[in-house]
View 1 (tube, rainbow, N blue to C red):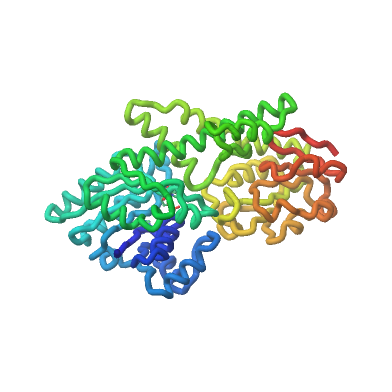
View 2: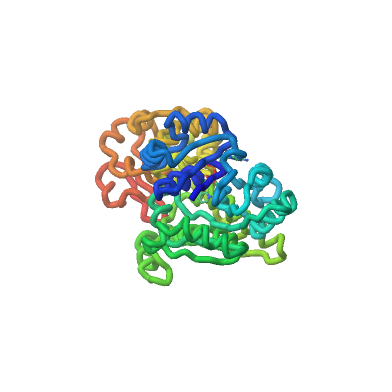
Length: 437
Ligand code: NAD
């Protein structure tokens, strides 16, 4: 089985590494020549636990290679996966498919007979059918199949998610598409990952509906957290109490600064735009977007409330990445909250185990520290913005000695408030009682 993957980002590289681990012959293509060169040198351009070793192992075994030569990579493949970015289109919130159409143009010229073209990128409903029509128009003689195979992996646990998925959704158009995709995913299905075959458009819709639903759960618990604060409740107990109900489930019920990252913000907006475009507005998702957009400024206000007059004051921010175990900062809450704190007059000293290099250009004026204790030096407030494990067991006595005022604003609820009792810290978190000094 010969597979090419167009786009070697978080999804393309993880998919390529995992497919090659199952013994397939995989070529990862990217039009960013620097990225290809660094992958050829064995350098992984992103941080994802376990990925470096998996790539090295399969490269060495001769099953995984990298190139910018799309023509050579695509010819003779059983399947060509498209995994390029589909970011938000600034005009209307819909998905920007320009990278995808460029990739389709390039592969169309070089496909050989019998290949299945697979959309792995998250694309608006109807896109796979349009890709099929476009290739057919360009190459009327070509016998090819079309499939849609949206990806559900989470950054930070991408390998585990890819290799042990809850399900694999595969939209197909013909029998060959189904057979080839069944073959590719057989190593996963024998591990009890259900393969679900649907139409092309249902596969596309499943991806957006899943992300929209998860974003809705997050916004729901964030609003419950706000209510908890008004009535001296504890959102973690409430979340546990509802999450133990099988009909609800415990996941995505962690109150925090609002969802961010490379998927939920853009996918909720694209889902809402899709609903509007088709005359079927998805009002719940429209509201979720509004709630989430308002949440980040509210979090900045919360930090400012912790310092009083911001003039001459310093905030130490721990965590920039949108979630732990990734260096991805796309649409991270930090990118909205930190500039608002700076605008209000706070100086920012910040740290993150993996995201500093990516963050430097996005957050001008921030002083960067590898070490969280150094970041805390002279700070009037310590803000926990990403729940990295390294922040869960901080030596709080040592942090306090570095700070000018012992104030912690924990936007991820990583400490039980009781643990801070008697330490001299003021500690506020999300949807839980505040601890005064
Ligand atoms: P990414 O930005 O990390 O990677 C995209 C890659 O495609 C880049 O390396 C870029 O150089 C390359 N590229 C763009 N146009 C190209 C072309 N014409 N030819 C060759 N290469 C090209 O994106 P990502 O995070 O991997 O996301 C890819 C898709 O997967 C998106 O649609 C996204 O919504 C979806 N997705 C992402 C995640 C995630 O956690 N990142 C999870 C599930 C689904």
